[in-house]
Structure formats: structure tokens, C-alpha cells
Image (tube, rainbow, N blue to C red):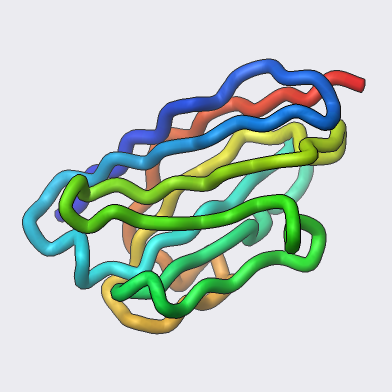
Length: 124
């Protein structure tokens, strides 16, 4: 079992930055691929970014490429999402997710564990 707890959300003006963190329980964090998804009320949850076991493999949604950076610190059992140049359309609840395989996939159903989510609101 893996428990995920997100933090770092909040209210920011357009053009600003936020860093989300996701702390994971368990001793095998390094063996999980991690990802961030986001969801707006009334819409499906969408993939934002993912990172493989060794941080050598990352993947991003086209809408965030060049603005968001995903990273992980296996010693701290934590994955991060640095979000720069934020836009109002980035407003959503952001979820951390984990899967027990090495490949990053952009599909919600392929992830085994989820956090409770953290709200990000970008004002114009």
C-alpha cells in the first residue's frame, strides 16, 4: 500500500509560479512511476506530467510543456511539480498518482494509488 499526500496548492496570479509536493509512504517509493493529473469540475481528469523510477524518463501534456517540470527525490519519498507561467486555464484540483511499473502512461486507469488532491487557482 502507498499513501500519497499532496501539498502546495493555492491562489496565484497569472504568470506566477507554484510548486506542488506529493509525499509518499512506504519503503519502495523508488519502484513506482509517479504522475500528476488535474481535474476541473464537470470535466474528466487529465494527465499533466509523469516521471519514471530513476527520473530519467519524463512525460508532459502538450498544454504544460515548457512551463511545468516534474521531479522526484527518492530519498525523501517525494515528487514535485514546479509550475511556472501559470495561466487561468491551469486552475484545477491537482492529484498525485503512483503505479507499480516503470513506464509513464497518460491514462488515469493505469495508476494504482491516488492522493486526495490540492486546489490550484490562477486568477487573471
